[in-house]
Length: 156
Image (spheres, rainbow, N blue to C red):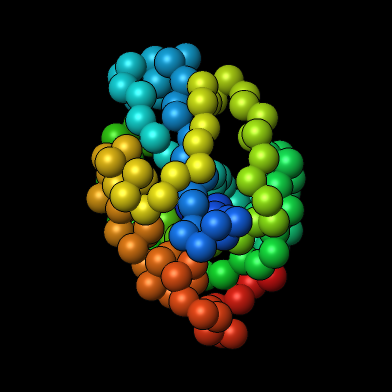
């Protein structure tokens, strides 16, 4: 078994209202059939880093693909550890958080069939994976629901 450490979760949120709202993406049926035994679920943006990638640059690029502009990006003080059945790897996935300017209609690719901006309670009703639920709690504790995230956590 291999240990994979180049996978990253990015919690995207806005504070247009007083309560933060988080971006969730629903996997498309095509993606679910290809990689997840037909099971669809809600997830967050994220992806893979290549050797030599600069984390802030990659995250800015991911946000740009969704036509979003970051106000800031922070480490969220959480790492999920899970077994990836499809890749047959043990994966360590750190969570990061990006506050964006204003929510927009997010363009979708074949990977996702819908998106939404959700409150914490709405996220918890939709998410099924422990790593995402715990990652959300850490994002709230260290970034999205504090007056100002600690400066040492700021990436951008």
